[in-house]
Length: 255
Length: 255
Image 1 (cartoon, one colour):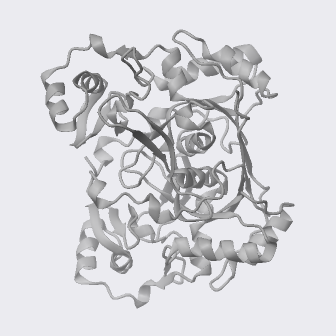
Image 2 (cartoon, one colour):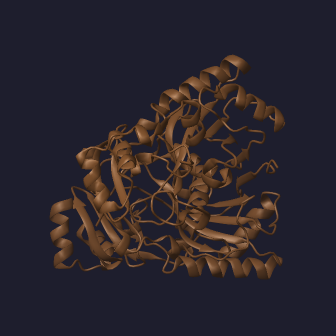
Image 3 (cartoon, helix red, strand yellow):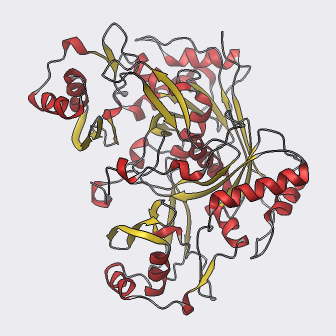
């Protein structure tokens, strides 16, 4: 039997205003849906750019108010980066994984391994502010999902994505920081393995794949179109968390 | 000015037969398009699962005919894998990057850093065959693109994808091995950086993002739906290669 043709549609919503600290994202999403002529359907997944979540949660830090530690001063010598910025990065990190020239790879306090702890200095502006990742991206997804369900009666999935680099490939790709209402990982098969193990398992990071797909049409770092509605995600109705995507240190060959 | 709503549609094509060595993929694609009620439009990108490209190129290796080298025998002791399989993996590799338990991370002869050199032993069957990556994925993409243009008059992009693991995250994601008729990397901005450099550049691995998006609806390792038609890819009409996505060793912090 030929399986039915699978179809996935991603729509970058129009009408998203500039998001300010304290803004509630739920009415912003609902307004953007209206302006885009869409409504939420069961099984839909909303992908939200990290930047607007961080802004709504007022994750700004004023660099002028940050006292660099000796460790930050030392890293400033090596990297040529601003010592206050480095102090902010260190406070967001559990561990510094690699330093070379102007690249700082850390283990973020939430377990992510990424450059500069995700601290965004690109729009620091005259105010001297940088923007941190959301405090708890999985919780941010759950909260937005609950509010959308309360307002519309429809249960959708929510993913927060950001653009991250990779160890052995150039360029960033959209990656899932937070997840609610969909699986983060799916085990696609368990077939006999002729090379020793009874079962071979293939886990697919479906939330990361969706985060990457949405990133394609978000534009400049999610600033063009920070909300993407995905319809046809093939694994609805299961529960996952962004934290499920973290490789445990015991399985890490590269630290 | 509000930018127009961006929309990306991915359709897994129906009617793809089992692909055998020597099969020409172009008529298979054209038949699947017909059976799916679609035709190619300029700017479309066709994403093709690595497995059917490798099969069409007869990239099978009979393990019984492979003589394991001393190095393969040594790795068999460490990993518990079949020595002939390890010999095949070594022949596909420039370098062994990491070995632990049953995990072997190598630099593939084409520069990819991945597990088991992409050698697929999952369907080894009674014939004792394994399947290698395509000999030159960028060339395979170019050839299929040319044939499709010859048959339809329409120039589309072609990506070959495969599901690969990552250093610090669990699960595989669709990744671009080969590219033709679209950019692999796009430089999304060059804004002044207040922290030392005149320009800050953000390169996005758009071919990898598209490969991940297509993987979502391909199903089990691309065997369910090995052909995905993407419409609305936002960077048509530029030329890239899968090789552009490889991080040069000089910029590699993790080997």
